[in-house]
Image (cartoon, rainbow over all chains, first blue to last red; front, side, top):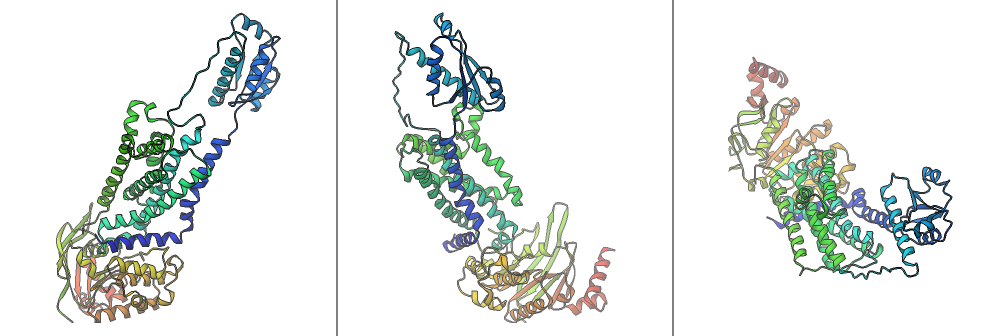
Length: 364
Length: 238
């Protein structure tokens, strides 16, 4: 191994990127745009609109309707029951609730029977409307004189009542974005080396295979680290994603993911002949990891056989590590974090060896 | 001319699936010689050159380069290789490309000389993606010889090069050979073959004939190399 030759490869790679504005934009403009969109959508999305028709001749309908109007899960508008179906059809509401004329009366007889009409093609929105109705009914019932009050006292081991969806996804997203973009750029540039014929030239030089792979790895890692810093600062200080852990530790995990992506990209580029084929690795390699690494659904909630698959994906461990640090304040004394970091590091080593081995040449 | 052997190819064969790319080829190239590999597309010229730079392992036979039997990584330091397409980094300048190939061969100096040699010093700052095909070929040649190799392998170096530049290239090859550098050049252009000191005619992975251009013409009993090639190729086929 010659440090000079490795440095030559690294320098060449970075010199090339200096003039490649499009790739630089992908690496450094895309992440804040993607994260920014995610943040905006998760924090500023509007709640489903629900119509409320109160035809109750007694007092209860008004009480529940007013409880509904204070719900954070839905926004309510007063409508008349006869308009309901038309408004469901034109899409201005996802559900409407009717308190029939005998609502209070039958409640006294022990049956609380609001009528709920649901548009039905948007399961999430309907579920939110039903939840809001349940809690409005609950609060109306507990406000009745002499009623039993339900007041659970809640304590949080981690996070707190203010933790939102963006905090949960943001922690994983900063890792995913770095992993995905670095992977794409690495696989395509290494493939360029092959298709433009320069790899053949490198192979006919005194360079060793390991020097090529390590030179590339260092070059991309430099770019990936700059990107990781950018993504982290954006997530923490622009999006205000919840963080309870050490920022340097988060950066370390991100960096490890970036190095994994670099080496996975180098390794897989050996199996593609054109850029088009390289891009085909995205649905094969990135999408399953996105679905199975616990970013969207906790690994433990998956069917058992899928958990086995999740457990051999590097992203699973990286996402878990990022969430442990950011949401639970984990540090390196936690055995779960040690395991996650060790597994990701092991993937790096495995991909370096695999990448070097697949760089075929007789003379070595 | 020294009698020292720079390249000794001994009975090498190479198969790609059902195709016999090389079929027991033996040849010796002396130091300071310009040796031309002549043959139609798909004859096995590139496979032979790739075997000499160690990119391909022959199925049988041996290749000895500058006294070292391949595979041998160290001997590659003394070998320059110009691939068929101008294999360069399009995003780098002319000078950055040459400097890079110098660096991976462990050389710091010689960049200016190499650029002067191909008349590109004035254009050294141009980005390769923006320069003409002929300039790319010249830059590619500069990359192949910046580390002052003792053996230079040129795979169809003048494809797509205009006649004027072609003459310049050959002028340069001759100067290098005079300094003791061995050059193996593949071509399918017959007037280039005339400029080589010795020729090997290749078809179907076999060496049909070998010798100076005059020898080859005499062997075939023809006035020019083109006819000689066609006649010799026809004889082998029948």
